[in-house]
Amino acid sequence: MRVLLISLLFLTMLSCSSKKDTKKRLLPDGIKSATEEKYIVVNHQKKLLYKKKMIFTRNGRIKYSKTVDSLGNLLQETEKKLWFIVESYPDKENYYCKTRWKPNQRERISCYTRKQFKQNEAIYHYNKDGTIDKIVDNFSTFYTQYFYYSNNELSKIVIQDKNNQLIDEIQIHCVSKDERGCCLREIRISNKTNHQEEIVLYPKYE
Image 1 (spheres, rainbow, N blue to C red):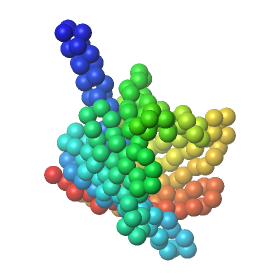
Image 2 (image 1 turned 90 degrees about the horizontal axis):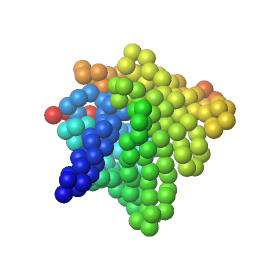
Image 3 (image 1 turned 90 degrees about the vertical axis):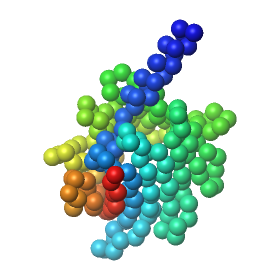
């Protein structure tokens, strides 16, 4: 019985140590839900890539999300369970994603099919405030994304391969914020290709 209680306590500690999605996304406390729209911008014309609705738990994690394309076709749904997240797709098997806490502000996030075939895995490194320091792909590209911040805003993402060769550098600018400091409109431009994207967020608070 004592071993069982210790095991449950350990699992609870692992769950609680998982970083908040609101911190990762630089969203303010008290956010209840949000809709994110991502556009590609070509010759000052915007084309919608996807629309994602997110519902957050009180402790800042995504409880449920639904992503659709520009025509409203379902791309992905996610649902938070007790120990994992289920990712559902219209054209392939569900993914079951587990987060394992590691020392030194790190998490290993791995996704599998029901038959335990691994689909992806990444190591997330965090800053002390819960924001992302870097993401190391541990399965497919093996690229590393480095996140840079300025004035409590994400300002740049640098992408390198496993040999530390530069793949791309994304410049990020927040164009407008709400009264709580949440970025409502963000522009991302690739230094390598000049590819431009715009992310628009519609938050709802408690």
